[in-house]
Length: 103
Ligand SMILES: [Mn+2]
Image 1 (cartoon, rainbow, N blue to C red):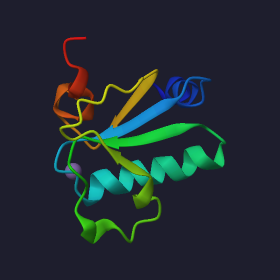
Image 2: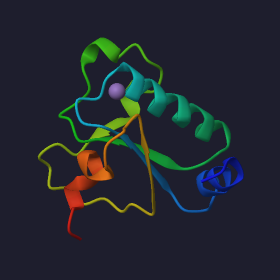
Image 3: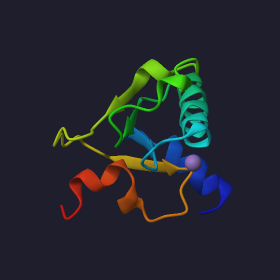
Image 4: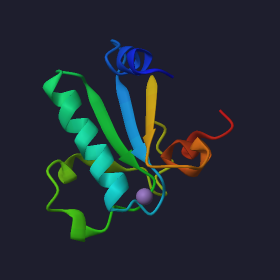
């Protein structure tokens, strides 16, 4: 996906769900929250979701940490019109989106 295609994807009218790999670490959370900050400035509706119970509280100083939602063991099926997975070299099935794997 080239830059313009990525920009078009991010700025579409659909709500975005942002996530990262399990055991979210500083680079994953930083990428999530940095993207979230930019999307907020674009008035772009989005959610930040992780598969972990919650990210390590040592990262709670990061702006936007309180906006992170957990789907850990919730069985929660959230609508995902558009998904952005950051900081992963693995398949998306290793991230929060595997909660609905097979659907
Ligand atoms: Mn990472």
